[in-house]
Length: 79
Length: 79
Length: 153
Length: 153
Figure 1 (cartoon, rainbow over the protein chains, first blue to last red):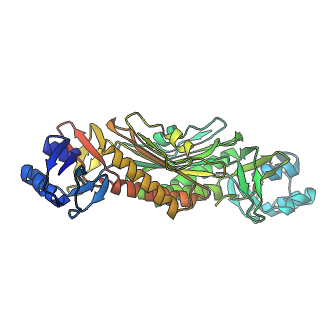
Figure 2 (cartoon, rainbow over the protein chains, first blue to last red; figure 1 turned 90 degrees about the vertical axis):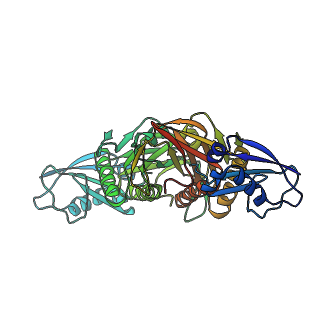
Figure 3 (cartoon, each protein chain N blue to C red; figure 1 turned 30 degrees about the vertical axis):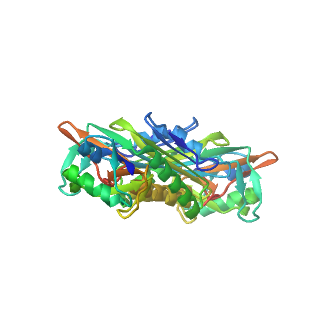
């Protein structure tokens, strides 16, 4: 299956892009995506990361489906 | 001695004016003015009245001096 | 009528319409990140606290004992700045005739930390309604009434 | 981007300057007498919580995960209206580049009783800073930094 991964702010700077597509085995979880991204971009590991799946906050154990939209970002800082 | 008395809002409506001068014996207190005004305008007695002397809140036992500025008004209602 | 408490604080009585933004913006010093603004206005419908009856107001008239009101506003600013960790305060109260929806009072408080700004702004409106000699008349289609004390908690 | 929670509530993300008055005024229903508005803005000087050092900011850049941010703003409005006795809420957050002093966020709450308006407005800014995916970059003369979490309590 394929999922889209979005980056914002600090994570976009580290990833060097705002959107990638990731191919995953079936039964993958959000944490599998996170581990792969940290392997590709080790500096992500210097930050407290938050995840969303389909625009809802999610934990690493959230199961993924083909076409899901993940986002990886640091603690929010609006206001 | 002579003091000026100012009315606002409800008290101005009852007194039918905004400013009067009152002649008083020496050693008069604010309550003496109030009693005289209530005698002249009995409807004042239907209200909880507040006093100021020279633009500071005052009690009835406040001593008056020639030229003082009294004001008689109901509970304030700004905001 | 305008008063100045210190540096960026201010307090005014005005018969002109009040612009909320300009009040909120005048209190902002460079080290602050948040302003809390209370905006009171002429409301159309008021519930009588005793009878529960709802009155429709046509317009309001505010009058003030102006020099004393300004003195009391200045005292409020001195007290609030002594008691709360805030930077600047602006208070503007409208006088004269107000149509429904027009702003009667704006209180803006700027502070380095928003918690103090909220607490100080709330304290100021409570104390203003208790101590500043301003008087409100509600005018209805069939009469009018001077309000005595704080009509709205 | 604009959202509508119900009747007079609204929430927006905008790259245009925010007019505080128009936000505060859009939430006012005829039975209300008070609106409380929080106005956050780009501040010039920020103290580092850890080192105590003061940074001078040149400008800010905000970006958002826009569709999720709007969903979270809508949830905030649903939650605040369930928990507090308030009538209407408006939330507008600026995105893009902000010069010093420009408004980043405005939250206005109208209520029949001002106490609930103060409490709800304070709750909303705390929760917005915790849950809405918006990200702030501070740009200095000699560098820049994405802020992580609530920089100002």
